[in-house]
Amino acid sequence: MLASATRAEALLITADKDFGELVFRQRQAAHGVVLLRVNGVPPQTKADLLSLAIARHLPDLEGRFTVVEPGAVRMRPRK
Image (cartoon, helix red, strand yellow):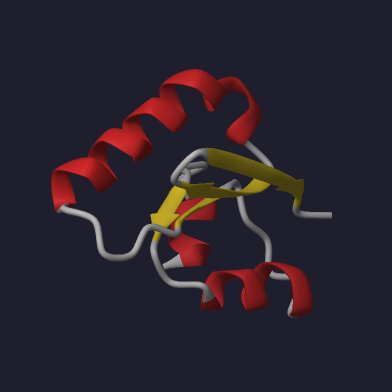
């Protein structure tokens, strides 16, 4: 999935923390990853948080590993 998104120059949006392992420890290429870390909230709330984060930060998401949580958006270059 990560390789496919990278080839397509697309952001990978996921709730799977294992992508951090692939990007940082295994140094796999990534065009950009957005990790949605919101547990125990309704699906619509998750969608709203993700939509807001993308709307606010879209120009900065490329080439970064971004974590979206309630009340916070953290970005790290993928190195």
